[in-house]
Length: 196
Image (tube, rainbow, N blue to C red; front, side, top):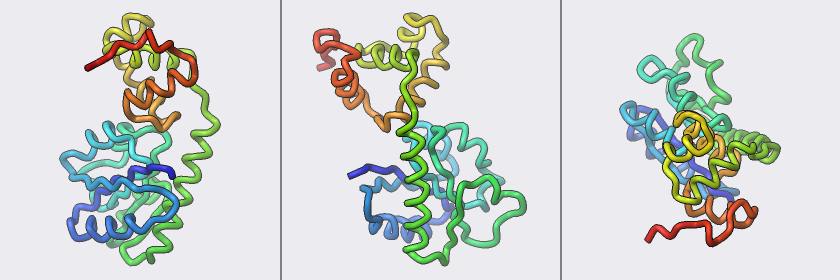
């Protein structure tokens, strides 16, 4: 079963709890639900790379959608969670919209369509040679700085490659990336430094 991270930034604990209950009934994927606050939204999205961000457009004046998109992976879908009237000009910043009064089925269908698009995009993307080099560095236990020095790029470029790798492979931990690298014969078992 597919694991999906859905982040929500509604600005209301009551709305958050209602969406959590709705998402826990989602069929076809195991949903990891993450409530966000205005203060931690950008950092949490950058760290978690959620598949979907449910976002109250009324908060766009406090936390611009563009700011959050820059922190997200390219495949992250932003769905407007309209709890009232949509602010003018904000609706085109989202991939889809659900409302506070949408039925559970409508919410689930909208999420399902967004996830299908994400899967289609991911399946078509290949790991580049540079991303392969970054994977090997990660698996060997090198820091971002050491990887950057080894492949002669900046640390920011390495971090971008890491985000792209996580998005393309849907792998978000070094342990899972190690298994991937061994299976794909990118590294040999003896190349891996134990971390215990």
